[in-house]
Image 1: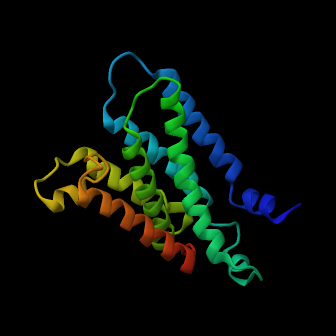
Image 2 (image 1 turned 180 degrees about the horizontal axis):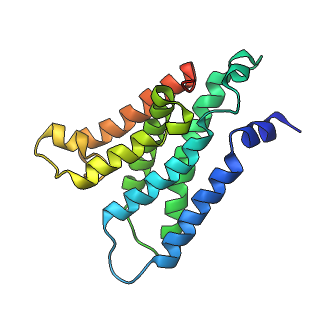
Length: 188
């Protein structure tokens, strides 16, 4: 077996991809007439990122740390690919009919949520990497948006991507989470 196949299997990529595909299929099947709330699109993205976050840690962290390969680029690629797959699944569902969110929102939110998942893996461990994206999503959907830049930063997932604060927050989360996860790996 090649290293890529071994890496994918050790990171549960096939199971994560199946979960993302099932979420996309469910969204497509349950799509009804009329417009859909942006919160549904963000929920789908967060679910996809949570499914992908399972693979942010291997079966044996000691083995990962002593491996004779460079983990930094692989970890960074894993986070970026998880965000791309999460967003691409929603964009694919939208391409066949369901209109959930503008493409700019999907790109921004999938990037920010992937960074949050990576940050969650660094802070909480890979098994709990999903807590930061899901927690921030709950905060965003349940707490009313307060006025000002702090409100835009806190509710970046549902604010227009044209606002500087929401876009900067998402891209800063992606950069911070990816860099920290690539350098440190998941918490043991």
